[in-house]
Image 1 (cartoon, rainbow, N blue to C red):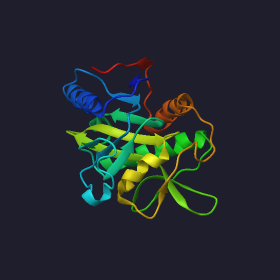
Image 2: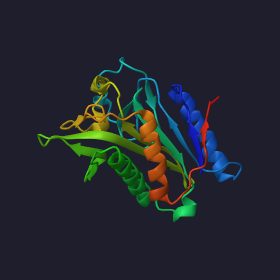
Image 3: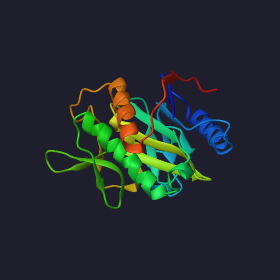
Image 4: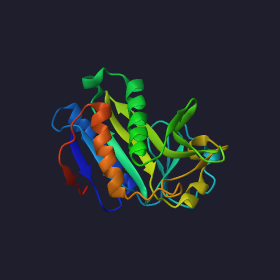
Length: 218
């Protein structure tokens, strides 16, 4: 499993272009599976189920058609995005199980940072229960599968500007808020989360990550 990391902010178009190319290469066996860790500049993405009414401030940040499942999401600095390009034909061709594994990857990563993340029936993403009983979203996931090869992936809020989520109804859910590790008082760096992601990826998917490579997409 190739393990890629980009330190600079990656334009969304660049990320989409790379994933499209890599998915084709995995399918024709000219390249191997990969996980790519990155951050984006502030932007909104629309999934295939996005409701235009949920884009509250269309001129605030660039808006991109992501092509993945789901609704509107925000990406920006302080959020760890992990895109996974994996051939599900090697793993039972089971998309539901793959989504469950992505959720488990997030939950175990958060646990190593000292946060209890939970699934909620009918709500996409991973949630935390605040001291007052309020439930806030701390991580999102979105998946696209082409000829059994996955792309897109997960996003964990480490220390983003949470006010940036105000331009959308995140994932179409109005009655709950958004939080981050920093908002919860967790002093975790991006490198800390990257270490946890790497360890728990092996635990969940049973795949050994290769050496981390600094990656500069073209």
